[in-house]
Image (cartoon, rainbow, N blue to C red):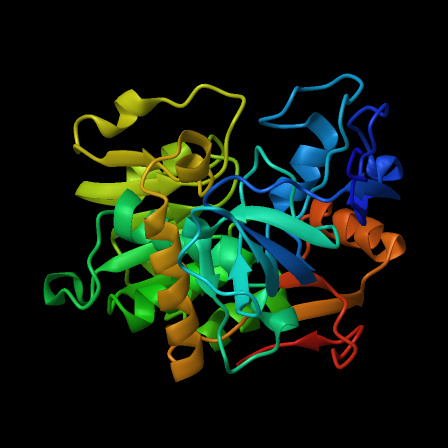
Length: 361
C-alpha cells in the first residue's frame, strides 16, 4: 500500500505559472520536502527578505530560467525555526534545536511550513533574541563576513589593519549594516559609509560608521572634504559598473575591492592594473551551489550568534510582518523599491511585535 504524500503550506510561484511580478506570488499546498543524507528538516517560524528573493521570483535564477515552472518555486533565503527531523547522516543538531540559516538558491526556501537544508550551512540560533529577529541576520551576515574575510583577505584582530580605511556603499542596507559593524568590532578599520537620506545617514552612524558621505554625489571630493585622500578597501553592494571607475581613482595602490552585485555592463578591469588593485566577487550561495567547504558557513553563523549574544554586534532595523501572502507581496515590493533600511521579516511567532521597526539585540 502506497504511503500518502505529506503536505505543507507554502508561498511562492506555483507550478504551471511563470516567474514574473509580485502578482505571481500565491499560497498553495506543496509536498513536504524529502531529506538528503546531511539535511535537517526545519519547522519555519520566521523568514527574512533579501534582494535575491525578488530576482529569483522575476527570473528563476539558478533554476530553470524563465518559462512555465514544472515545480513550485518557494523563495525565502533567510530563516529561523526548530529542527523537526534529521537526515540519515545528520549529526550536528538534535530534534528540537533552535536554528537559523540562509539556505541554498537552487533549493526551495523558507517561505513555507518546513524547509529541508544541509545541516552544514545552518547555525545554532542566537539566544538573546527571538527567532523572528534571528531570521533577519543569516544571509546579510554571511555575505558581509565572507566579503571582508575572504574577498578582501582581512583577519580579525590583526593590528596591521587597524586604522586603515574601508568604504562601504551603501552603508544602511542589510549587508552594509553588518560590514560596518564587523569592520569596526573585529578589524579596527576606519569605516566610511555612504547614504543619501537623513534616516540612512543616521542608521550608518548608529552602527559605528566614522564618516558618512552621499553616494548620489561624486565620491572623491567628499572624501577630500573629510581629510581622506584614499581608501584601502571597498565593499561594494550596488551595481558594480556604476562606481567602478571612481573606485579605481580613490583606492590606494595595492588596495582591494570586493563586490556582491552583478552588472550587465563590462567592467574596465584594466583601470586597476597600474595601481595593482585586487578585485573579488562575493556570492554567499557559491558554497552551496558547488558543494564546497559547506561547514564554513555553519561556523560563521555560530560566530555570528555569539557576537550578537555578547553585544559585539546588533541587529539593524527589522520590520516585522505577519505570516500572510499579503505580507510577502508587501515585502517583495518594499525590497524591490531600493529604499528598504535594514531587514523585513515575516513571522509566525505570536509574541512578535508586528508592524514595528525594531533594532538592537
